[in-house]
Image (cartoon, rainbow, N blue to C red; front, side, top):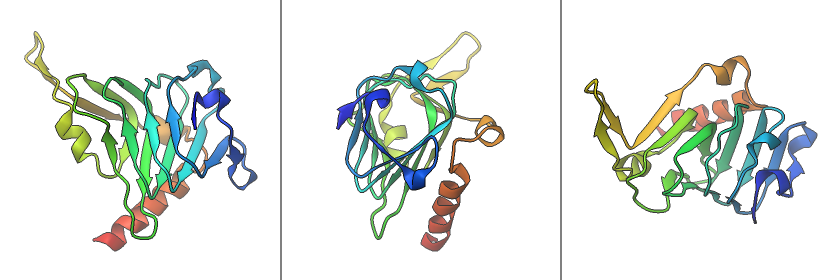
Length: 168
């Protein structure tokens, strides 16, 4: 399904408010950031989440992909969301990109799981007048996600941590 979040058909996950479930591939080609009225969780199982646009909302948004990948397009430069991939059966997903890029990516909130390809293939690097080096992927973790979390954040983080413990 290719759609904006505001028009994407969905099912409520366990009948919870602001929690939506998808059992098909989701591609975000545009987002009306004003459509995020509340902190919201989007749970995608058995398929990829493709992010082809910036996400600049000030709400706490959680995307959970179970058993597949989160793929960030090479021209995306800002994501204000929590991104988590979780193992399903024997399949681990990754947080990756569709291609290498010289564009700088800022992720404000958090990323959980394997981001090595994303980090190694965003090749933007620059030093500024203060001699700080700016690199291709910046992940800015914030306590905001815990003081005003999206629905079920603790459930999915616990599931992620439990699977990580078993994997070790």
